[in-house]
Amino acid sequence: MAETYNGYCVKCREKRDFTGHVEETNSRRMAKGTCPVCGTKMTRILGKASS
Image (cartoon, rainbow, N blue to C red):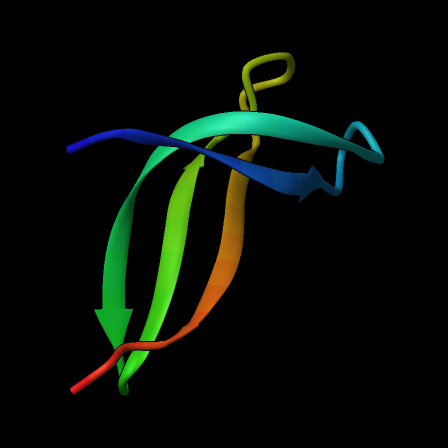
């Protein structure tokens, strides 16, 4: 399920909205997607998952 998140693109050096999916690793949730302008991978740490 793809959702929209706001993250920082290192290549563009700007905050942008990107569509991505949520992955969970070591009880941490992270949204992963690509920048709509340059295509670089973007991530956003969402916080710990509730157990």
